[in-house]
Length: 349
Image (cartoon, rainbow, N blue to C red; front, side, top):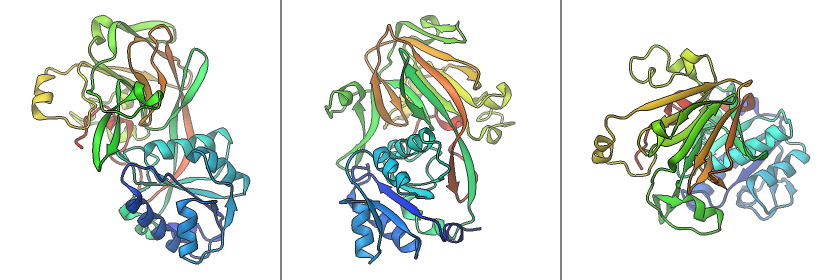
């Protein structure tokens, strides 16, 4: 069944992030295409939003909820209005905000994610903006996506559906160019570029179920990230790419990885890669019953699905727990090339 047929008779909530990385023109084009493809489906949007403008231009009558706030807050109002499916338009962070509310509300509404952000690499992305219209004619599958519950000092930080990166920078788009931005500064409301560097100092450590597995002797100067593994079988049996992802062999749907060099950056040159050789990797797999902790990290932030969420404090460990089958995403094809197995690999801008 294609999405056009699947969605008939269902009430659709449409929510977009007007500040998504690729710009307003790209966002408006995606919204116009989506509204046109929805046909006569009942539609709910936020008052004063760009998605409401797109519906008005198309002559569509809509249920209108109160506007304002982050995408997650709008999603709550759309659920209160009785939507059966949520179409989110934005980057990885926007789609994460939407999905987190779906999980918290224990909603059965699936997510259709349309990527217009700086990266658009997470498993919540159903299609890129340019392919949003074609998605309606594609065969649809419902995929259950795992998440990592992230907390520190007993306080929840959020859910990560793609990855959690412990870093001093995060990806953003400024003046049409992907840029490494200062993660700790963003938490203070400042917007400025920064050079990626390690936050793993002489006190860094990783533990699983209370047992220290890694210390600064192994990871000082490196980079730590963790990811739910949504497609481990795609890595199984591959001599290089599969071997780099131990998920299929550890029997787990969560993986923490430590690289011996900082390779998550918007611009990665051949010299950067050669300078990191020989690259060393450490892996810690975990299942829902496991508790993984990372401590002793310095001068950076916990970046959840591309969004800085909390300042790193060396004395306050960050805790990760796996939540399997956290949210349903509608996609044209099974997840391929977007699993957590890719998370540790550098990406060119």
